[in-house]
Image (cartoon, rainbow, N blue to C red; front, side):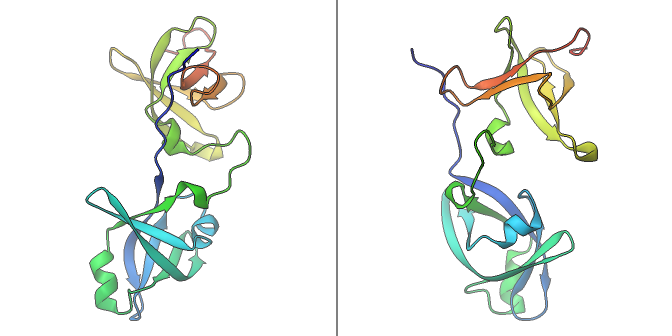
Length: 179
């Protein structure tokens, strides 16, 4: 049997250059990875240009509060760094180690959401919020509007990327949750 597969991106956004730091080309980056520490351990970052991802070697990186200070090869002056302000940086999927069962948020955004019991499609995953450290899935309904589902085993039964069933998020909701 053939299942609908999820389309997984090879490069994942992991940072945005928000400012410069000093005069030697160092960038202050806003973290979009799991943590600033994860971002600071990457050895290569990529810049997207016309659909291609160009590698940039990380010469050094350090965590400063919730930001990461990054010195990239070839970015040696304040002027070089200013040109990259506002640029999104990406990491190759293979540069991260995931534990079994873990996945990237970028991989689940846009996936269809199904009722686990009936198989009925109830929407698509529109956003993932993390108020107070607990993830909440924002589901966009086919007819418009959204509702939220806490990301706990009671509600999220399975996240499939198309290996053993159609790619999607399979949920079990309580009465009134879709309203």
